[in-house]
Image (cartoon, rainbow, N blue to C red; front, side, top):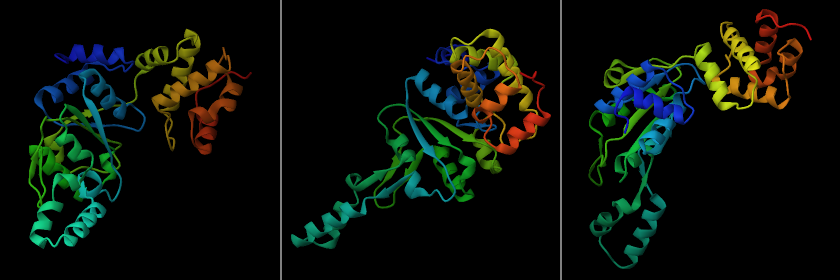
Length: 288
C-alpha cells in the first residue's frame, strides 16, 4: 500500500481529496523514510484533511492531538489517575501495608491515563499521529515534542521507558502563527499547502457538489480565486467555497450576480468588513 507517489495520488482521489504530484511525492517520502511531515499553509487548505485521508488509505488509526497555548505533558502525553491512586492507598492502608508496598502498586499502567502522544506510541496497531496546529503551542512544548520524535520513546520516571510498538506516521500542521526552531524543522519533511489553482478547485467542486451546473461551478471558482487576491481578514477556504456552491445549488441559482453575492456572502465570508471590501473591490458581477 502507498508504494509510489502516483498510488498515493490515486488513493487520495478515491476519497475526494485532490493533490498534485508534488504533494503526493512529499507525502510518499515522509511515509517511506519514516520522517514526520510538517504541513504548513493558510487555514482551510486541507492540512488536517490530508492526515485524515492518509490514515484512511493506509489503513491506520488516526490519533489526533489538538494544540493550544499552554498545552503540557499532562494533556498531551500522560498523567496519573490520582483519584484511583488515593482509593488504592486508602484500601492498602486499611490492610496495614507499608508505604513501599503501596508505592509499588499505585505506579503501574493500571493508574496511567494515556494522552494522544503516549496512546500513539503504545498502540498495538499502526497509527497516524496528527499533531494539529502545533504553531499554537509554546516553545517549551516544541522542545518536549522534539525529544519524542527523535527516538519515538518516552521515559516515565515512576514506571519505565516506553518505546513505540509501531512507529506512527506523524503529521504536524501549522497555520504559520509562529516560527519553529531549526531543530524541529530539521527533523521533519516540509510540505507547504496553498490554496488550489482554478483547475484543481473546480475539480474539487465537481466532486464534492454533485449536480451543480458546470458554468455556475466555473463562475464560483473564478470568483473565489479573485477574492483571495484581496487582502482580507480571512480569505475563503476550500470548505467555504464548497459551502457557497452547495448554498447556491440549494437556492437553484443559475447565474452569479451582485444580488446573489450580497444575499449569500455570509456563507463565503466571515467578516462584515470583508463582505464590504469584496463588494467594493472584488470581481465585477453583473447587476441583477
